[in-house]
Length: 103
Image (cartoon, rainbow, N blue to C red; front, top):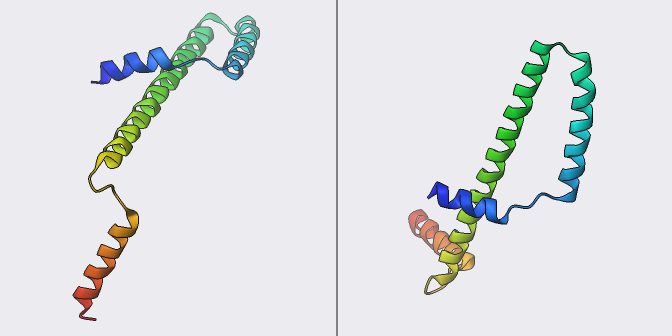
Protein backbone atom coordinates (compact mmCIF):
# COMPACT_ATOMS: atom_id res chain seq x y z
CA UNK A 1 0.00 0.00 0.00
CA UNK A 2 2.72 2.56 0.80
CA UNK A 3 4.24 2.04 -2.67
CA UNK A 4 0.87 2.76 -4.30
CA UNK A 5 0.49 5.92 -2.22
CA UNK A 6 4.06 6.92 -3.12
CA UNK A 7 3.22 6.50 -6.81
CA UNK A 8 0.06 8.61 -6.41
CA UNK A 9 2.06 11.26 -4.56
CA UNK A 10 4.64 11.44 -7.34
CA UNK A 11 1.89 11.64 -9.95
CA UNK A 12 -0.02 14.49 -8.35
CA UNK A 13 2.75 16.48 -6.63
CA UNK A 14 3.87 19.60 -8.42
CA UNK A 15 6.67 22.00 -7.60
CA UNK A 16 5.24 25.43 -6.94
CA UNK A 17 6.81 28.59 -8.37
CA UNK A 18 7.61 29.64 -4.80
CA UNK A 19 9.52 26.41 -4.20
CA UNK A 20 11.44 26.88 -7.44
CA UNK A 21 12.47 30.37 -6.34
CA UNK A 22 13.66 29.05 -2.96
CA UNK A 23 15.65 26.27 -4.66
CA UNK A 24 17.41 28.82 -6.90
CA UNK A 25 18.32 30.93 -3.86
CA UNK A 26 19.58 27.84 -2.03
CA UNK A 27 21.74 26.90 -5.03
CA UNK A 28 23.13 30.45 -5.23
CA UNK A 29 24.13 30.41 -1.56
CA UNK A 30 25.57 26.91 -1.87
CA UNK A 31 27.77 28.05 -4.76
CA UNK A 32 29.08 30.92 -2.63
CA UNK A 33 29.77 28.58 0.29
CA UNK A 34 31.63 26.04 -1.85
CA UNK A 35 34.34 28.58 -2.54
CA UNK A 36 34.83 29.28 1.17
CA UNK A 37 34.86 25.72 2.52
CA UNK A 38 37.54 23.06 2.33
CA UNK A 39 36.79 19.65 0.85
CA UNK A 40 35.73 17.91 4.09
CA UNK A 41 33.43 20.81 5.00
CA UNK A 42 31.85 20.72 1.52
CA UNK A 43 31.23 16.98 1.90
CA UNK A 44 29.48 17.58 5.23
CA UNK A 45 27.43 20.43 3.80
CA UNK A 46 26.32 18.36 0.80
CA UNK A 47 25.43 15.46 3.10
CA UNK A 48 23.34 17.84 5.22
CA UNK A 49 21.54 19.13 2.12
CA UNK A 50 20.84 15.56 0.98
CA UNK A 51 19.37 14.72 4.38
CA UNK A 52 17.20 17.84 4.28
CA UNK A 53 15.92 16.85 0.83
CA UNK A 54 15.14 13.34 2.08
CA UNK A 55 13.34 14.76 5.12
CA UNK A 56 11.31 17.14 2.95
CA UNK A 57 10.35 14.30 0.59
CA UNK A 58 9.32 12.04 3.48
CA UNK A 59 7.33 14.82 5.14
CA UNK A 60 5.54 15.56 1.88
CA UNK A 61 4.69 11.87 1.41
CA UNK A 62 3.50 11.54 5.03
CA UNK A 63 1.27 14.59 4.57
CA UNK A 64 -0.14 13.19 1.32
CA UNK A 65 -0.90 9.83 2.98
CA UNK A 66 -2.59 11.58 5.91
CA UNK A 67 -4.75 13.51 3.44
CA UNK A 68 -5.69 10.32 1.63
CA UNK A 69 -6.64 8.66 4.93
CA UNK A 70 -8.72 11.68 5.87
CA UNK A 71 -10.49 11.58 2.50
CA UNK A 72 -11.15 7.87 2.94
CA UNK A 73 -12.60 8.44 6.42
CA UNK A 74 -14.84 11.23 5.15
CA UNK A 75 -16.01 9.02 2.30
CA UNK A 76 -16.85 6.22 4.73
CA UNK A 77 -18.81 8.57 6.98
CA UNK A 78 -20.74 9.98 4.04
CA UNK A 79 -21.69 6.50 2.85
CA UNK A 80 -23.10 5.39 6.23
CA UNK A 81 -26.83 4.70 6.39
CA UNK A 82 -28.12 6.65 8.25
CA UNK A 83 -25.46 9.31 7.72
CA UNK A 84 -23.31 10.31 10.67
CA UNK A 85 -24.75 13.16 12.71
CA UNK A 86 -22.84 14.94 15.46
CA UNK A 87 -26.11 16.18 16.94
CA UNK A 88 -27.47 12.63 17.18
CA UNK A 89 -24.23 11.39 18.75
CA UNK A 90 -24.21 14.32 21.18
CA UNK A 91 -27.83 13.68 22.20
CA UNK A 92 -27.09 9.97 22.73
CA UNK A 93 -24.07 10.83 24.88
CA UNK A 94 -26.18 13.26 26.96
CA UNK A 95 -28.94 10.64 27.35
CA UNK A 96 -26.42 8.06 28.62
CA UNK A 97 -24.96 10.56 31.08
CA UNK A 98 -28.45 11.39 32.35
CA UNK A 99 -29.27 7.70 32.79
CA UNK A 100 -26.05 7.07 34.74
CA UNK A 101 -26.71 10.04 37.01
CA UNK A 102 -30.22 8.91 37.76
CA UNK A 103 -31.65 12.27 36.83
